Image 1: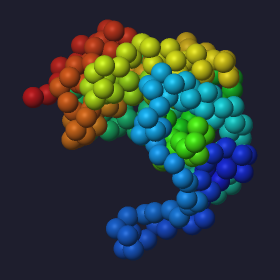
Image 2: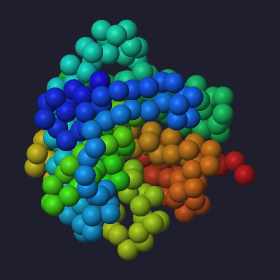
Image 3: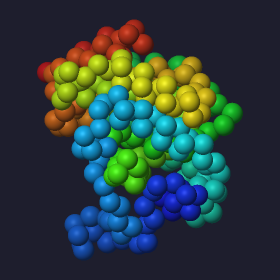
Image 4: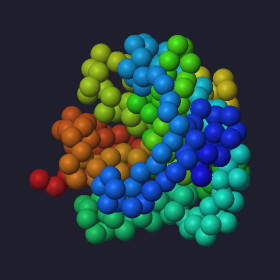
Amino acid sequence: MVQNTLADLGYPVPTVHCTCTDKTILGNTFSIMDFSEGKTLLDSNTPFDQMFDILGDLHARVHKVDPEPIVSGFSEVGWDIESINFDGRLEWFRTTVNINFPWLNESVEWLIDNHPNDPEGLSVCHCDFHPLNVLFKDGKVKAILDWGAFMIGDSAMDVAYTLHTTIPAKLIYPDIDPAQITASYLDAYRRTRPLDETNMAYYLTFRNLMALTEGTKGHVLLGHPEVVKMLLASIYEISGIKIKMPE
């Protein structure tokens, strides 16, 4: 529904023709969608500052989309709207932490106590918007991929999620300057669409806390000691909470 709505509006998102939930066929659920040419933006040999300039403009254009057709579509088929908004995601995270990661309970309380109000206008949020999810060819964006984590919410949340990716990227590409690529991305975004940055630090903290749980569960990059150290530092800088990781 999300991909087809965006494709119908002319955005570079592959149209989905069939979704199969029978896991016996390929071992999991799958979709059949239009083929898109190109390499990921990361593999396109585009310099980092230009890459994030492209990313910022593209992200802002996605956030210009009216989310109402998607919300209406979900409502019409009886889908729980809480599952595609931040309140539902926060409640899911609170439950997950309470059961599996009790050492993060104080941080979750901070999230609940500092929960910002939604802005007047909500956006279609990809929630995993980074260079590996954009196909690029001949100087043009061919497709935005991987919409499985999408939400309808504050565009600042989606921007914060993208800024989070500069933390693990620093480990893989030690020569990059996170401040420089962040500036390129935000400047390009603001040239296309205004950005209210009031709540960005809050959402960055939420994404960083999620990353800690992913690393604990075995994600190789997010569980790397240097990345964990950077995540903890960012969380402390914003929330003032010092997290003691389990052994």
